[in-house]
Image 1 (cartoon, rainbow, N blue to C red):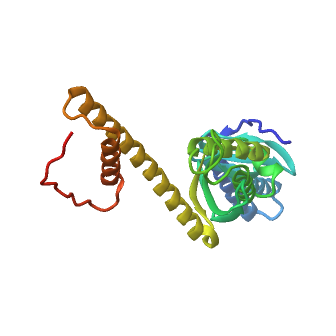
Image 2 (cartoon, rainbow, N blue to C red):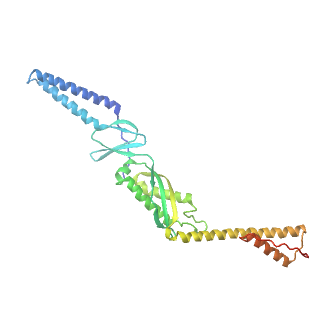
Length: 297
């Protein structure tokens, strides 16, 4: 695997003065040579000045490709005839070997928003899942030389990691204490980030954050799963209502007995319990029947 190493460059402002000086000297020497040649065709000094001016002009032109600028969170990978020279990360105006290839690399944070994937969860249920990944390049040498395209590599490995994540967890209704895709959002996101980091380390990439952006049952089973969820919600609500009603009936009987308000036999207690449960557990509003007669207690 490649490894990034820093490389030193020359300040572009310092070299800019030298390049301008080369152009000035080249023009001066060139025109002096023409002036000397105009005085006589066999003037050797004129030919030398003319040739020197041409050389200085070529040197100034050759030095121009060595200039480059870097903005914050940008880098340049320098290569010379196929050999890796190093990476420049410091922002500013630089000059380096004009024959070196300068490959730009962005160090900024990037978002990778994957499209919705149709996969099976741990229990074999078809689901739709998508994730967003925040990543950046940490090692420019690995991102440039160890993978063909860093962006394409991140996109493909992200899709693979999301598929594997979906196969490792149940959508919902897991066993007691089991993490599911719906209930364990933080645990699932941490697992996705860990797996992505393992996969993308070869490309010199650091994963800053990974989150699920879409999670749903596949359309072919969404209706059946919705009815199941509704049934489970009704059962849970009914259980809670019954538990509360029984507690209220028990409390009413205990209060009546403790305060000596009324002394009920078992038959009347059964009737009272039945009426209270109907009132408390019934879905529709109950209509009371008032007894205008006497009740012996």
